[in-house]
Image 1 (cartoon, rainbow, N blue to C red):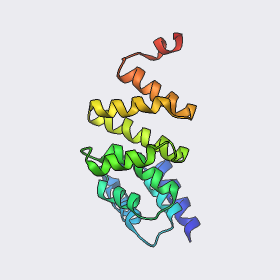
Image 2: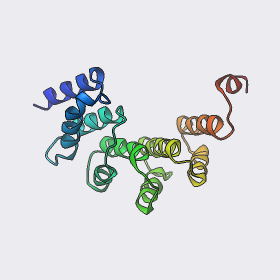
Image 3: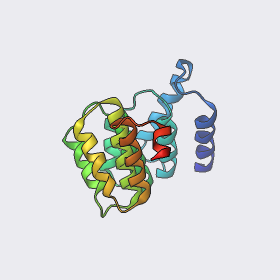
Image 4: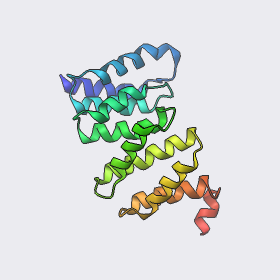
Length: 168
């Protein structure tokens, strides 16, 4: 049964405009699936990735519940990444997730999701402390994380364009 769910979600993600008002019922059903405690975490991960493509507001409560429960690492990493897009303020819980998952001892995919969370949050709420946390990611062990942090800081803090970055 889960194969059918995965194929359906993949089809929705590729072919359905979730921002179109006539598809609001589809978005509601995807959110219901995300909150279903009996649904396989791999399916939930696909649902969350589909919802990430929508500009519709997903409740940060749903994402923090995923992060607080024993869910798969893929689902938790996707929830962490999405949190930056959907949270309205960086409260203590937000920062505790960032600290936990951006720690040097955390797996690569969690550190990358933490960085993306910070980037998405900064794009909505200009916050100097968020820039500082992104700056700290420049010393990560993984070059992919360092490069993404550097690219973001160059484009958003130093205001360097693509042409200027190519010549540096």
